[in-house]
Image (cartoon, rainbow, N blue to C red; front, side, top):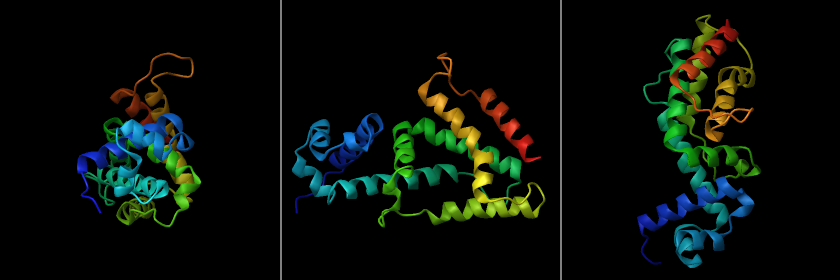
Length: 195
């Protein structure tokens, strides 16, 4: 096997994500990817077994980065409002720092690819979020509810706002970016919904 070049591998990964975000999974072939990364198709197979292996590696890498950013300064012991606000800020920090990775992450999570056996769950992240919710319920800060209902209330509005932010326009076509005041205003409405 030939030596691996980290720069080439990173370029292949970045171009693959960019291509998927712009053209969808069907828009990315190994031939098109090789051309975009300015490498031969054979070079891609030095780093990845096949297209599926590449996609799984990309997802696992992005998920690990997301988890690291989302958990920065976070503890499940935080009170509900403080912890949720930190989650919103950390998640927005991830989205702003890694827009292609975030969009790829969302596309992958909402596709059948998420069910592949090579897709790794970040157990630390999941455990932290579960404990945070459990603690908030035990302290009487929020009522007990199904995780899906909690997620929809706690994060649904945030991700709806993020969609406008990434498209840079409102439903009426006006320019839109999330500002700290807009984020806090939305967050305050979410906190009210839990009360």
